[in-house]
Image (cartoon, rainbow, N blue to C red; front, side):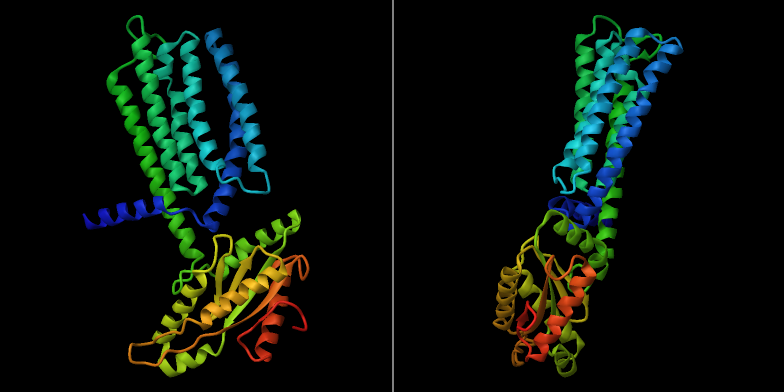
Length: 378
């Protein structure tokens, strides 16, 4: 019972959290995949009304299906165009997922308007697309998107049921689609709820695995894996769009002395203390990455002068917040040295920026430590 409570608490926490940069990037890739798949499926859907007519289906039903499939194809092409944009659209996964659900509802409604009200509730093929739309949200890696799509499917399918029953002139019976029964409709709603829950659990687990794989266990920062997989795309986007992006390579000065004098446990606490002081000053668009030991990378979407000033503020904040190992132990002053490199002035890729920032970090240490170097010769 406690395990179930813990799982529900974790799910609630994940709902409150805004997806970080890693999950947003993964979700953007999933959105593009879904957009391409949607266009492919829309092309296949064009075949269904044709086959229905050739195999003896009713003409009005085939025309409704053809109109729906054509609309799906045009709208799918529009969503694909949006997903292909180089600048990520934060609202796109939620809107496109709700679009997919609403599209299924629209096709079912068209079947009813074409003279087949029973088909609106009993068309198994079209109704199953609700489940496909919900399962597809797993590729967005956003728990809120999955739950919103599932809730929308429940609401819209329930409204269809109520409207069809309320407007029916007689018994809802069809030779092609059978008899509409309350038990069948309730079972379908339960299936939608179950599909939503299963997909939500899959998304939640995928989110946690992605975060664990790219997170440093000691500090909670992004790790070198995140640096190597996510930052190159940010650098390329900045270069392509003509924006300045600076990379700061930061090293805590003489940190090994704390480990030698106070022990590694105190060293770990000192490291977390330094990270906490720096992170309090950083914005969402300024990720901090631990690349090893007491060395970090900061990404700053600023020109070189502003980046230097930003790092100077961080340096002074850390210097003014000494680490207290124990209540009766003398506080230890922590300082940092940093080298800053900017795209496109210094390099146009991550490797070049890291190399130039490392050279300037070495210059900062050679000049006495506790300083920031952003230009050669500083």
